[in-house]
Each structure stands twice: as C-alpha cells, then as structure tokens.
Image (cartoon, rainbow, N blue to C red; front, side):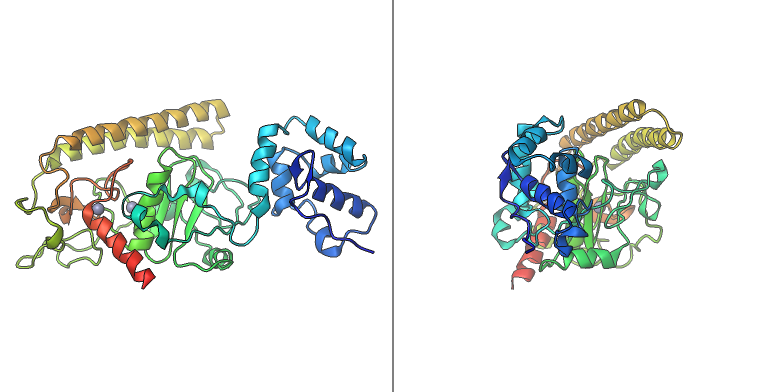
Amino acid sequence: MLIPPPPRSTRLAGCMWLERIVYKVRMNAAGILLEEYRHALGAKSGVDGAFLNHFFLTLANIEAIALLPDDEAAAAFLRFPGVTPEKIAFWNEIAPNLGLKGFPMEGRVSMALSGPYKHLKDKFNIRGALRFSEESGCSEPSRGVYKRTALGATYDSLGSERYMLTEDNRDLRDIAGAVPYDAVFVMVNQKRYGGGGIYNFYCTFATDNQWSPYIFLHEFGHSFAGLADEYFTSSVAYVDLPPTTVEPREPNVTVLLKGRPLKWADLATAGTPVPTPWEKAGFEVLDLGLQKEREALNKRIAARMREGAPQEEVDAIKAQAEELSAEHAKLIDAYLAKSKFKGQVGAFEGANYIARGFYRPALDCIMFTKGAKPFCPVCARAIERTIARYGE
Ligand SMILES: [Zn+2]
Ligand SMILES: [Zn+2]
C-alpha cells in the first residue's frame, strides 16, 4: 500500500518538514513514492526547495541521511553547518503555512501602517500569495544582472534606474488569483532602492532597503489611491508631461486654474496664502546637487558591476551609496524644517514632475520626499476615501 508522507507539522530533530522529506526520499528509493509527490521531490519552487535552501542543504544530503534510522538521521541533520537552533526555530515558525493559500504575511510587511492606514487597519485583510522563484532578487539590466524569477520584476523600467516593474501581467494575476483581492503589491527580495506603482494596477517595492517602509507607502499611494508624485526635481521615466492648463485627475496636485476654488479648499489652513511661498529656488539647487552626487555613485556601481569588479569592492560602493542616501535625506529634511509654512495646507509650487505651474498641498509629504514622515492631509484624505469606497 502506498502511504502519503507524514504531515509537515511532524518534527524530527525538532524540525518540521525534515521527517516528511526524509520519508519521501526513502519511499522514492524503494520505488513506492506516490506519483504526486515524486515529480516534485526536492523541487526548487516547492517547500522542499525552501527547506533545503534555508538550511544550505542539497537533496543528496537528505538522501545520505535517509539511509540511517530516524534517530541517527536526526543527529546527522543537526551536524550540518547550515543547521542551527535559531534557523530551526525560524523555519518552524514559517513552515506551517509556507506555500499555502492565504499565507499570512502581515507580520512581515507590518504594512508600515502609518497615518491614514493606522486607524483604518481593521478595514484591511492582507493575504500573501507565495510563489518561489528559481533565483532570488530581480533583474538589474544597467548593472548587467539578469535573474529568472516568477514575475520577471526588473529595475531600469522605462529607462529609469530605480523604477522597478513587472510586465508579466498574466503571471502576476495567476499568482494573485489564489486569494480574493482588491489591490496587489509585489514584494521583491532586494536590498537596492526601488519600486513602482501604477493606479489600479499594482505596486512593487524592494523589501530590504533602508527605505523599504517608505517605498511601500509611497508606491501603494500611487497604485491604491491614485496619488500623484509631488516631487518635481528627480528625473523620471515619463516624457509626455501633463499640461498645466487642465486640472489633473490626481487628488493631490493642482494647476490652480484662475477663477476656480482651490481643489482642497476645505482642508486649507486659514490665512495661508495661495500660492504659498516657500524656499523653492534654494531647494532646487540643493536637491539637484545631491542627486548628481548619488547619480555619479550609482553610475559607478553599474559600471564596476558590468566590468566584473570584485564583490567586496561593489559591496563597499553600495554601502557608501546607502549612507549617502540617508545623509541626503537628512539634509533635505533640515532644509524644509526651516520653512515658514511647513505643516500648513496651501498650494506649494512644484509637483507632478513639473517645476512651474503645478502645485502640491503641503511643503512635505510621503509623495514628495523620502523618509518616515506623514502623508500631507490631502493625500491622507484621498487614501481614507479610497478605503471607504472599497468598504461600501
Ligand atoms: Zn512616486
Ligand atoms: Zn501629499
């Protein structure tokens, strides 16, 4: 009789899945493993693959210990250098749900729940759909890095180096379709800064960068609430910039059409002039200067990586770039902190990639500059309205 393998929760050497994979290997060697398990045995894209990967093992390692009786196999497992009590504990935490529909990932995202999301947290159900990729990370064409992944996410989208998108929409929807959803965000295992968000479509963000919570909130602001970028100094992927003669659809930018009330008049701070004066010229000089410095470093990283420079050298420049990014954000915050109308709602010129003729509601916002900061009141309300609409 063919017996299915033991459930994933049974433990050998205190570790889930070990008994199951050892059993499968033994049954396979005896030629009596059920067909449905045989073809996926040790598969990289399955839980077997995740298990082996996590403990730095190969299927051959398991085959070797499967020759031993259970207690000796357990002892042999514990002797592998990649197997530590901490790693077993971590594995046991994630293994019960790994690869199952509805794998709860709220703990991992923690949603960087801030501002408008915090008090409406109970309006969200976060579900994870997990699909293993052959390789970790994503493609970085300008650095000569190409990865085979489930969604083919890539930097350099539309020619912008930090813009990370996937064009595999069918695969994206196939994977997301495992759970009911209104909005999709794609978590990309990446240290490098990057992401992207398109209204009513999806957003992506790098999970392991110092700015990851900010990137998530910013990109989700685009994809979920249809917010515009409020910055205007950074280089962007778009060439057909919006006209300043038509009021844009996005709730957080305006062209201040003559004779019309301010788009967010009901939120405007009483007594704040419109347009609202701010130290724009100085900001442009400062920000463009800082961007140039970061660009030069990014170009160097790309060039050295394409030239096949030693890993330590590349890692060192990358670390330097991250430090620079943190320093620059501090300089920008310090510059804005001195502004007279900070914290007030008015109409500040410079938004939507355009320096003149477009206005944003506040001096600063998550849609304007990087950092652990709140959304401006206009963006916050737009998000609340979107949440309310989904909840109707
Ligand atoms: Zn943006
Ligand atoms: Zn805003």
